[in-house]
Image (tube, rainbow, N blue to C red; front, side):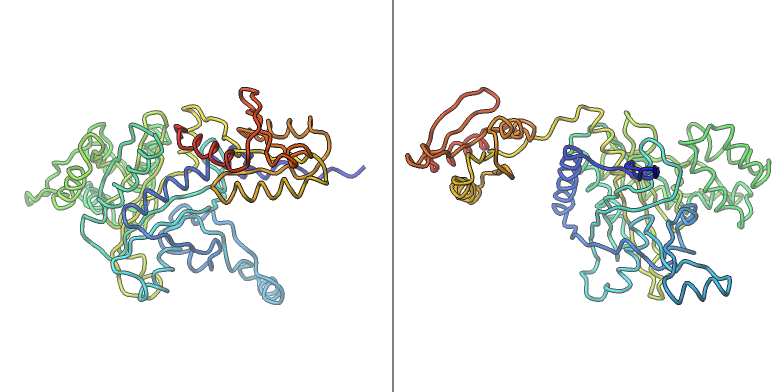
Length: 441
């Protein structure tokens, strides 16, 4: 006997049952609505990008995690024969690099500055674990074309408002500035060619034990520099009072900008942490992460990336963006008690093939008046059809048999109380409309 084809998705990929899909869709609708209320316009970018887009600028460690797509046909055969790279494309690992390409292509036709949001799946070939999957959604919001601190304020405020609208309390944004970090690294004596590596290591502070971070830094940049970093960026209360030999305050300009963000957002929801890094090396200035008290690690983040469009041969355009970690957000929502999704207002049963036309006619009438109607996709025993209506969590079951058709009424059964009533179709439509108006949802 042949081995059966597996029914489980590959590691890091998931199926979503109807209730989960409904929760995901509702969350995306809420986030989209909030983003639009801040004036952001929705865009969409390709899931597949040329490798030239994904490699060599800004992806950092994630460039090693690209799901590559092999060349096809003669191009693949030629690459094999020549011992060349067999792939020429890959799945996007975030939404920011594709956005920079998108802007380089379409920027001249778009508003300036551009306020855009993009929601969709991304892929990373990393080790799967709770809250980190190989396929996951991001909910990005960006401002392209403004170097003013108002861009950071707009992006961060929109994301915080989305968390509020989803009923996720206690979210706080933590801020830093990458240019300050580079100044602090220089002040600590870290060689210029090792500063990016130091940033990558320090960025692991919320994932790796502190002694391991110190060890990695010591191996990468040397003990004297590591000791100095422990006094600046790695303290429990990182310093903001680092002075150069000439008496200039390191990071004075950067901290003024971060303090402006804190003042606009509210000190109860924002704080500055000079040890925050963020892993992407395309960040050029302020970076930020969103934290929730019930979740270890971040549930979103972003920053300023003023030079990313230059990768595509266009002029330098200032840009700032942030993203909600959608899968982690859903873990928080589910942890707070996910409710089963309600079904249609009415499940229309089919008494017989002879009365199917009446059932479909009634369903069309009700749908035209805003009532959601699920028509049983078959016929047969009514007992099985009522079971279907219960499984679909419909509020009412409706039936038009020969007697109801002759009397021009519809039989309704409240599936919660068991109450049965007969009503003309027009009155039934009003009944469902009144129920929705009184619903707390």
